[in-house]
Length: 217
Image (cartoon, rainbow, N blue to C red; front, side, top):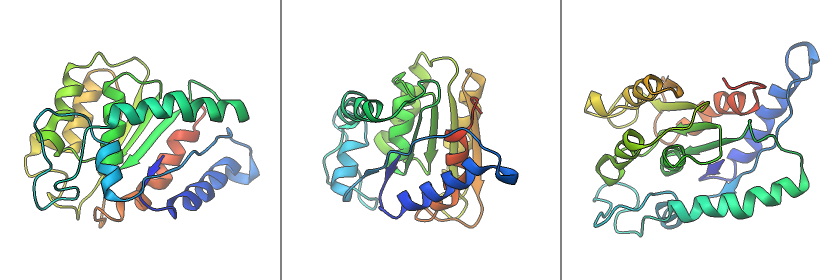
């Protein structure tokens, strides 16, 4: 899970404990939450964005004038450094691994899906679909998407663009429908009354439920 604020980690762990108890105290599948502090916007704009030749983040949005294009290096770090570290300490299930992120982190999750990375479940909350003039859509359209992948895309109705984007064809809802047609079990969730800054907390419960489910949701 990629997070802008360290407060997301205790919230996620609390929700995971409640999910694990189930109704009437019944035990549910256990899980591990690995949270990586995202740091300032300079680091997020670099680590979470795909490389786009000649592109610069435009004015008026977070990351203007900052370096971009480090997503593949960051995903390699997660796969080659973080994942082995976790596997040395705990028993993991390759069929139940989720990558969850917000804003640029949500963009990173979609980029990982397009790249065919090893996660089986993805949660993209308020993903920055505008980045690179919509490059993530091109990546997903051209990708040979692995079988058995699931995705939740969540977006607040109080974010700029309302249901996602000014152009309905470029909305998160449309993206989810397109991916479903291509074999990804994708679901779109509209977060009523939520702005860009509040959507991570609002979608946290659903993201945890997907990650801790015994079967692919």
